[in-house]
Every structure is written in C-alpha cells, then in structure tokens.
Length: 402
Image (tube, rainbow, N blue to C red; front, side):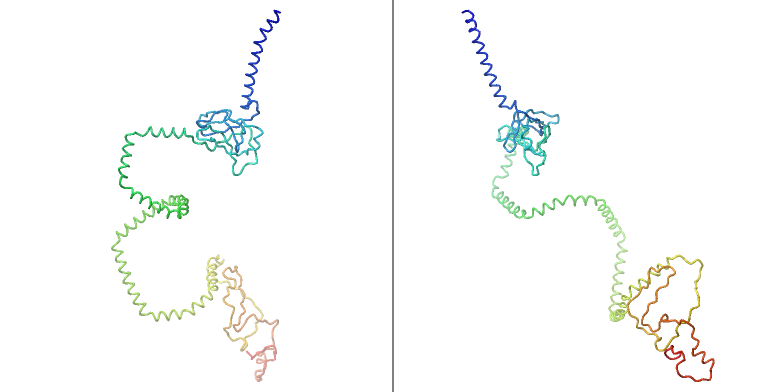
C-alpha cells in the first residue's frame, strides 16, 4: 500500500511535467513550421541602395503575388548599401528568369516592405541560380522618409524669416489677382501654342550638343578669323587714302570702259558673230587639239637623242604610182571628225597610221610589183620623131600621160 501511494505521488507531477513539455513542443513545432524552419531553402542575395525603414527579417519574397521565399537576414555594407540574404524555395527557382528585376515595395503606405521579383521585357531562358547576387532596381519611398526629409528642411528654416517672406509675398499679390489670373491665362495660351513645336524643340535640344561641340572644335579658327578681321580692318583704316584713290581710279576706268563699249557695241557684236564659226569649229576639233597639245607635252618630257641633230633614215623603195589627172587633184572631202591617231600617248619611234580620207590622192593606194620598162619616156628617147597622141602601150596606166 505504501509503494502504491508513493508511486501515485510521484507519477502525477511527472505526467503533468510531460504534458507541459509536450504542449510547449507542439507550440514550438507549429511556430517553426509556420516560419518554414523545416523547409529546404537555397540562398539568393539582393544588393539594395537601402533596406528601408520597415524591412525586417522574415519579410516575404514574392513573384507575381506568389510567395517563393523570405528574407533570412539583412546585412549593412560598409558603403551604406544593404545586402538582403533571401531564403528561396528551390522548387520555385525554375520559374524565375536569371535576369529578373527586383523591387522593394510595400502593399500599403505604412506596411512592411517585401521583395518582389519582376519579369523583364526579354526574360532570359536561364533560371535563377542558388547563390546568385542581384541588384535591386527600386526601393519604395516611405512616409517616414518623407517626414524625415521635411523635418530636416523645416529645421533649417527660421520661422521669423519664413513669416517675413510669406508676408512680403502676400503684400506683393494683394490686389493683383486679376493681373495674376490674366498672366496665367496668357501663359496657358502661350504653352498651347508652344506644344505643337515641342517635337522640333526636343530635336533641336538633342542636336544642340553636337553643334556646340562642332563650334567648340572650331573655336580656335573663329578666334583666328576674328584676329585676322581686326588686322584687316586696321589695314583698311591705315590705307583709306590709297583705297579712296583706287576707288576713284576704278570709277574713272569704269566710265572710260563704259564709253568704249557703248561706242563700239556694234563692232564688238559683229566680231563676236564672226567668231561663232571659228569657235564652233574649234569646239568640234577640241579633242584633236587636246591630243595635239598633250602629245607636245609628252614629247617635251621625253629623253633627248643620244646626239644633237636630226636622225634621217633613208632607203630605196619601188616607185609609187605617178599622179594622174583628174583623180590625184587635191580635194577637201575628208569626213569622220577629228582624229587623234594615237596621240597623246604615242610610243617612242612609232609611226602614226595613215588616215585614208577623200582628199584626192592616196600615196599608199598601190605599188608596182616590178619595174615598168615600156613607159612613155622610153619611147620618146628611142623614137624622138615619132608622133603619138594615143595612150601609152602600158595599158595598165589609165588616164592621160603624165
């Protein structure tokens, strides 16, 4: 009986203690499960200009409204920036591109901030990697920050001077409401007229840096021109008497020239009309004239002969056909326009080709293949007293005897 009593006395406190321990363990397990303590996570670091006033650990990390992790730790960097160490769900990383943007914002003005992944316009085919470091693009400005900056501004303003300034502004605007209204109305009309020209103004402003740089590059030349202009103006001032005399002389020359031209206007017109055929012919043969002049220039630049003088090459050839009447009479019937015949680049010791034209005789039209012994001269030498008025016995010779 005594042992049972002792056992009951000891068992009840132990059962109570075990119950309390179990309840505490259940609460701790629930809290840890709620915080994701047993969930598998991978680290991702976000570098931000600042973490914000209401950014705490365990803040949510979302992608399009879906939570994919939480902020594990916030580290203050030496340069003033903040490093947010994220605990990401590894199953969600495949849905986030590697070039995703990061915004630190809050759902409400006074709410705690959260990290939001934003998809870019051209998402990368690669997914977010564990341990990757990303720069935050934007941190939402909080009301606390606005109040802090406003407080710093107001603390720098002296109330007395502010009151004095506001009083001066009120005195200046007192009784001028109509004029101020008219000014605002005129300003609105002016802006309405200026609005269609805004694209042109924007283009001018964009082109202004290039133009200004061009002027800056040419500034030395502008200064030189200004210096030269000053020197030129000084020279004109110093030589003003000579300039006046020159202008007077030019005026007199112009008067004399006007008199000469007016008195000889008709002869000058006749001379110009007479020059028309010559100029037309010169224009027609301009190519040949250019070839001739260019050939003279080339000949002048050629090396001289080995010995001074004229080199003549002589030889014996079969006699050409003698001149006949009337086929060998001179004739001006050549056609075909000007001919350069190899000029101006005529090779050294080259002979230009003979241009066959309707000019009467042609010394290259035919040569005798052998000597002609039955000529008319031989008959006169052998038979001086014989009268012969007919054609020579050489029937191949046509035309009258030469």
